Length: 535
Image 1: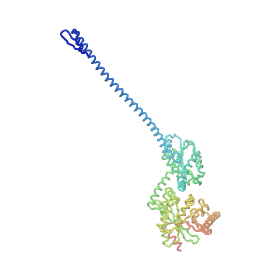
Image 2 (image 1 turned 30 degrees about the horizontal axis):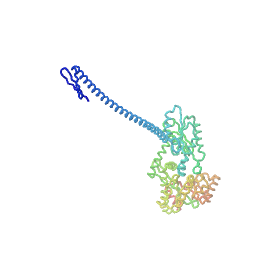
Image 3 (image 1 turned 90 degrees about the horizontal axis):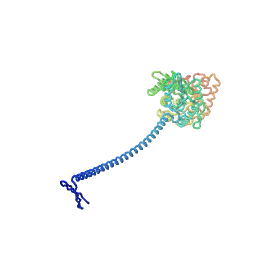
Image 4 (image 1 turned 180 degrees about the horizontal axis):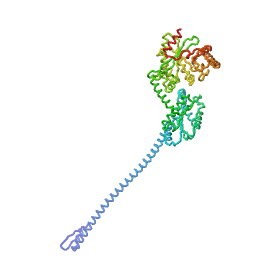
């Protein structure tokens, strides 16, 4: 390799090339130029090197930055995809949530048994209608309540009760038109909201149409059942301007229909509010009466028509109200039945009557019996048989001196249950009487099926028996047929000596009524017993 060596003198510059040893002599000025050029070239090369190096670093940084941007872009692209997927998932969740909300709303506003709108839906629709009610516009509201639905539910079971409600729904739909909104309010209550009301006469045609669909029997458990309805009607805005007021007044009208004997309809009027408040007040007072032991038992003697001696008493309930005085059963028993309080009240009557009979037995009257009326609610109570057994044990009373009275309607509402229940109590020694005979089914075929010991001829037969020959024949026939079935006949409501003479002539066994004594407190009943039987 060759090397350049510059040797300078005063005027000359020597350029030596090592290895080949040539020496060039150049003018100093030219030499300086050459040196300068060389230095410039060197600096240029250094500059180029530095520039190239810097550029390479810049390019490297640019590449790195570009790579970073690419990576960031990929990340952003992935994030965008993730967001898109999330957005799709959120959209799907939203749609699902929306469907669920609609389903929940449908469930909340629909009666699950019948598929009809429920009370909440009915109230919301009525709210909306009342908000948009125009001047002169009238809407009608109707509540339809099944009569004695509880008896079917209790005797056949809830599954058959549900089946009946579904059948009722189908029949009610047949009576509806495009102006009607039908809903089930709960239990055995259905409501109809009718818009575009035109005329009361036309509306009553709708009511009769509804009543007609209930004129055909319902088939449950292979048996036919006739179901009637009580209907309450109210009009808006005349009878109320709010949903709550209209529903309350509609119910008041329905209860008025039930109080009128059921199977009818009633329009709301302001007097019903007062009656409803009285009913609510009476319910409250009944509960307090049980707690305060305000119920008392009166006794009406039953006389043997052969010996003219008292052979028993019927225990009759009275309410000694602290403010109103003595209240008769017909004023509070229906409400006690409706609320279920009759079970507690009836148990107390049974216990008090058995105690009193035991007291008279200890006085020496050993052949007396005590008759106690049993309500439908009591008789259907699952603990009824056990309750009777417990009372007999507690009072130490002989079971064969207790006579339980049930009506034909109660006995025949579920014949199988009635027979089983009577059989259980008969094994204890308790006897049964069929009360108010002649006012219900009055079928000797049914009578033959019932294991009762006595029948009580209703007072209505005796009211005209003295002067009415056909009535006499009917009573005589009833007594004769009853005797052929080994039944004892008791005549109720004897008020005249002529009635007693007739009953004796047709061999009636026993009688009771005001002719002998009205129902009296136990002290007075004891006096009557001693006066008659110790004569």
